[in-house]
Amino acid sequence: MTLMVMMTLMVMMMLMVMMMMLMVMMMLMVMIMLMVMMMLLLMMMMMMMMMMLTLMMPVCVKLSREHQRLTQHSLNLNDQLTELRQQNSAELASLERQLLSEMSVCVLELDAVVTVCVQSANGDEPNLGCLLSLPRRKLRTLLRRTAQSCHCCHDAVICMVNLGPY
Image 1 (cartoon, rainbow, N blue to C red):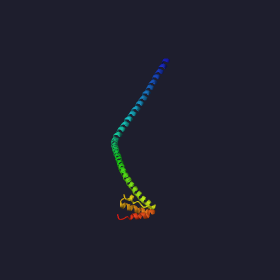
Image 2: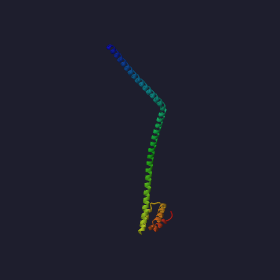
Image 3: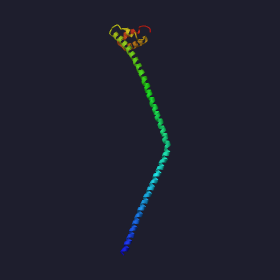
């Protein structure tokens, strides 16, 4: 009986080992199936990405061309802006020189008229020689304006305005 019990136990153990092996094999099969499914999913994802890239390629090319065009346009505009700034700078410098020149002439003319007015206001004989460099028409205009605005030498200026015809 012991032999029988031992044999029965051994058979049972072998059956258990076989069942365990079967279970391990089933688990391995499940794992393999999962891996296959994951690979299939990865392949599907890669195919979808390839399709998306294929669909997006014309758009990307178009966007790239548009980017190049806009970049070139921007460079052209920057060049034009630089050129315009240089032109305006040269024109502005020329206008500034012209304005300063005209202002210096005006200052000299006003200085001559003020000198005559001050001499007249002090009761001295006005020195009309300082006004000789002024054109006669311009001189009369300046003297009339001075007579209207400067009351202290009004009479002297009126006399000077009436120096004779142009």
